[in-house]
Structure formats: C-alpha cells, structure tokens
Length: 393
Image 1 (cartoon, rainbow, N blue to C red):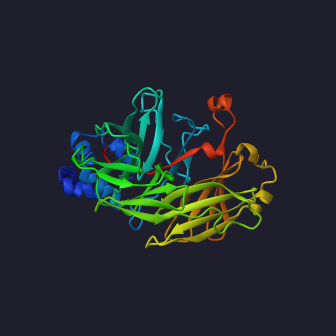
Image 2: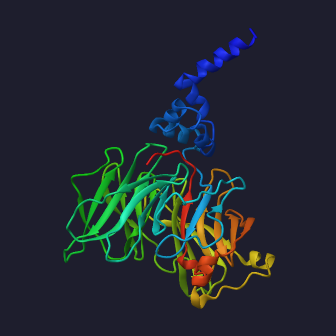
Image 3: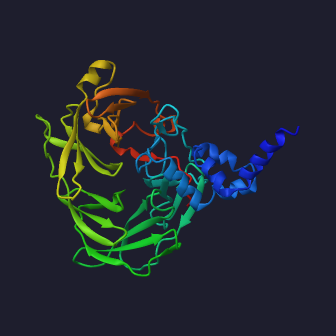
C-alpha cells in the first residue's frame, strides 16, 4: 500500500495543476474531450475556456492549418441533406457531425469557416431572417443580431475565423445602399466585444460581385464574381482592394463551348477557382490566385476519362437538367496528397491532384425525403467543410 502513495500523489499533482493538465489534454482529439468535460467541474471549465481552445487548435495544426474531416452537403432553401449520410467523410476515421442540435429545422447554412458554421432560419419572404453561429463539434449555438440600419437592402452576411491566430471571429454584413451610383455599406461584428463597429465602410462595386459567395483566406475575405473583377477585404487593416477574376473560357479544354460550373474555395492558404465545361468532356481545370493577386494561374488539369472506363456502370450526365459532375472540394496538403472530391452519378470520387490517381469512391444513396420531392440537381448542392474544433461561439 505504501508503494502506491507516490503514484497517487503524482496523479493529484497533475489533476490540480492546470498547466500540466492542459499539456496532457490538448493532445486528445476534440471528440474525446467532450466526454472528458463530464468528469469534473475543473476539467469542464478548463476545456471550455477560450485559451484552451486556442492551444488545442495550435497543437493539432498541420504547418499552420487545420484539415477538414468531412463535408456538409445540403440542398434547397433550407438545409436538407441530399443523401442518407449526415455528412461526407474525408478520412476513414471521420466522426460524422449531425446538426440535430439546431432545434428549428427551417434553417440554411450560408458558410463554413475553420470549424464554425454561419446560417439563418428560413421562414418566408415577409419575415426577417434570424442569423446564428454554431460549432457542430461542441454542438454550441449563438444567435446574432444584425446591425440596425434603415439604409438599403441586405446583400450578404459573411463569416471570418482563423483559430490559429485568435479564438474570436468576425462577421461581415454587406448592404446595398439606396444610391444611383452602385454604393454599398460594409459592417463588421467582433465576437470579442460582442458588438458591431460603430463606424461602417462605404464603397462602390458592380452587380457582378457575389457578396453571398465569399471565402476567408490568410486574413482576407474574398468574394466570387461573375465578371472580370471582384473585391477582397483585409480585416485587420479594414481595407478593400480589387482582385482579378477569370474571363469566361480562359484556357478551356479543346472542344468545349461554354462553362458549366465554377468552384470557389480555399485550402491551406491557397485560393482556388475550379471550372468545368460543356459539352461535358470529363475534364476540368483548377486555378490558383497568385500571392500578389496579380492573376490566376493553372494549377491542375484533371481528366476523368479513365474513371469512366474504370466504372462502366456510371450513368452519363444528363446535361439538359444539369446532372453533370460537380466539384465538391479541393483539399491541399504539404506532401503529394492534395486531392479533389467530385460528385458523379451518386458517387463521391476522390482524386489525387498531381497525377490524377483515383484514391477512393463513396457510394451515396439519395435521402428518401429529397428523392420524393425532386431528382437530384448536382449544381444546386451546397458544400461546407467541417473541421473538428473546440472553438467557442
């Protein structure tokens, strides 16, 4: 019995020393820490703190970035999974998140950003939308009130969050001002102060910019555009700058007549634009934005013809109703395992980008609810990356 006392004393020393306990707990994946919070009030308080969340993210980073483990897929005016799986796993051991903690089913996801989701509740066009932030890992949820303004119409609400730099996030609200010269207003919310800035930014922009389709990358928020130019917003310095966009049919495959769809996203600090073409030739290009924002350059060109031969039972896309293949996500890595995930004939197909090697195929079954409503429209699928994180909302 006497020999066990030193071990008991050591265990007590660790249990009541927050610094030592933190160094142990930050090594544990987020999904297991949620259960450890139930052990005692001390552990719950420690694991729930902003500082622990930041330390945990920094420990599980991969050279400065987190890696997504799954993709949320949704369709319609409010969130409905198109397939029986609650999310599409990106790794064999992925813990699939479920959004059943959001009690009201009439909601729409607007954006994902490093583990947090931005969304709103959807009722009808005559009711004001109510916005929220949530963390699917911790199942925490917070309502967000938009800035009170009688000026113009709401164009977009965006989320900016980098858990490698801060446990706090920002929300960007863009309104179209009642002005004949295409002026907009930009408002910024900080979770640190839980307030909207008292001042706002007025700027000019053309109607081609899609303020509802933005990407946060390297401290800058970028907006997609259907035109030749768009805008980016440096959050730290609160400065808007122009950035080029690809002209239609830029470096299109031979024989293509028109663009079919575009993917706009980021991975590991790289801004990507993926383009598929029609008539469908099973080839698509992935472009990357230059570090100085001077131009887009062709990073990858992928040919899916070999996949069509490997899977002779794949149904050919019916182009008239947009059944073609759809780029779901581009995921970079520091090694040679950068990959792209596409959706084709109820299969999520993952390719290694450098050589076009087929990595894996996930068979998907359409959810009975969506199957009864309408046939699946690939172009209408909304895709949101999921990261396991303890980040607070």
